[in-house]
Amino acid sequence: MVQAPKQIESEFGKLDILVNNAGIISGGDRLLPSQVNIETLQHTYDTNVFGVFAVTKTLLPLLKKSTAGRIVNLSSGLGSLTLNSDPNYDFADFKLLAYNSSKTAVNALTVLLAAELKDTPIKINAADPGFTATDINQYQGYRTVEQGAIPTGGYAYAAVKLATLPDDGSSGGFFDEDGVVPW
Image (cartoon, rainbow, N blue to C red; front, side, top):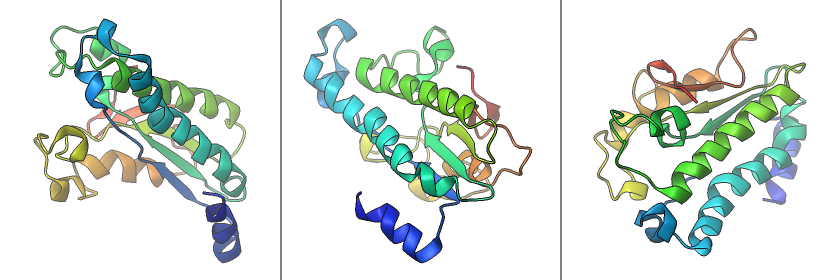
């Protein structure tokens, strides 16, 4: 990580787009919330929250050199407090304390950094990629990785759209392929 900013600055002088795609689910997170141990919570937050923050903080000076810096934090509908509180939510049974709350923390980080950066050209938003079959869910997602890579729909759509926002685009929001995701 220490060399990445130097290399980016040396080769490009600035950074236009940062996509933070950090996400793990520890095996110990599949327990009832009250049974999850501190180590599982710490391990998950180290990657999903502290990793996102560290990379963003490290690369922010290069983003500030851009005329239209964009930060996209990959989140999850599981990080939405509104959706987690809805018994009719499609994923209402997925009450993973560490993962869900870590993505809620990523959403909070997004909102707070957007407020800090509001007077700059930088836009920062969170994107929900949807349930794509990856390592994190033992390939149980209903979208294939190939489908997810198509920027006109699926997983990549929200992230690509947010990474290429116009100057008057939103900042501090949470989106999926259908639009705004409730906090």
